[in-house]
Length: 268
Image (cartoon, rainbow, N blue to C red; front, side, top):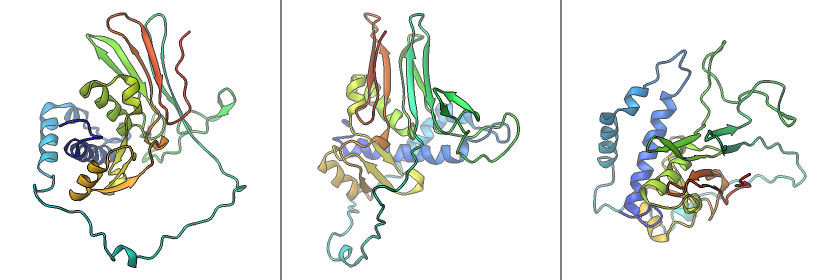
């Protein structure tokens, strides 16, 4: 069907699939000391086939156009309220970074260093780790919260081939980059730079999308009842991929960093 940046069909399927996964994960991933986690169900081929069939059978009926009207209805709506903020007003940024490392002995590490983790006191280079900001449903020794951490290592022929990760809210961005590499044959650099999107986050039927996706695809999505939120050409909220991979022919290691936010790919 073509790449999602140029194909309405591909982007609709990815949008509805990721939206379904978001719903599954929202209520299914929690403290394993207090709740049962359906890992076996999620990893089963039967459930994957059911999920695919669910997506296929919940799409818009062929020939139906759900594009919203563009005439005077929108003009009658009240203007949105905008809150002014002083340029010198104090602000606090609590952000994260992701590190992907491979050493000379062949050890692979993909690790998210975030404000949502750690123990009280000094954590690294004078940066204070105050503990997680995620609410926990249970308390006590060994209890866990459920932050969005998706450090990923991809194996090929039983050996690590590619590793990637991102700060922010990474499950959907990481999945999209892997789709670009594995399904569409892009290089990791091309995959990291390709347009990205957020599908139905927080239960809202809105697709937040980088504007480099074509107008034709946008119009097609609107006709299928999917609202579009424009994120601009590059938006760091869609992730900041850090990727290391090994050339299977030469064994040489390569690295690439995402253009959306500060990063560094370097070898020693």
